Each structure stands twice: as structure tokens, then as C-alpha cells.
Image (cartoon, rainbow, N blue to C red; front, side, top):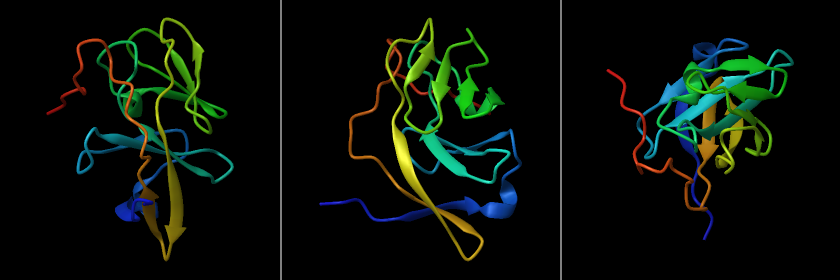
Length: 121
């Protein structure tokens, strides 16, 4: 059974090239708006080590982890640069009436070896 759509933020909350962290989903997710106006949603936790991808740098359709420079494709979640080897989950996103809605992936997340999501205060 497919997961239902959930509202995660307003489109106005997003800035091109910056991540927006959503903690109401477990594990947290990161919403990205690319320069071309496309919304991408990934798990927010780097698969190499505990770090929030929403704090990373966007380059085209990739996000670079702020901790050890692993890079992930925003479209597929594939790890594009070490030290990360495992992909992050990608979630389907839709913009409806100025709101970002997400259909969470039903795949199991690839959490870092310590099994935790990054905590931020």
C-alpha cells in the first residue's frame, strides 16, 4: 500500500541552493530547491556518518555532506563521492497550492553505522 502524502513545508520556506530540514518525519528529511525550480526530498542523514545533509552544499543536482564531503544525487539518492557508499532514500515531492507535500519512501533508510539521525538543537 502506497504511503499517503504529508505536508512538510510551504514552498516559500525554500531557497534555491539551501536545504530545509523537516523533523516531523522519522528519520528527518531534507527538502531542496534547485536553481531550476525543482523540489527534491531526501533523507537528511548522511549514510557515512552522522551529519545533516540539509546543512550541505548544493551543486547542480547534488548535495555535498558538510562533514566529510560525501556527495549524493538529489534525483536518485546515489552516493556520488566517498566516503559514503550507500545511497540515501529519495521521497516523492509535489507542490500543491504553494505547499510541499511528500510521499515517504517505503524502503528502509540507510542510516550511518551508529544507527542514529543527526540531532540538532
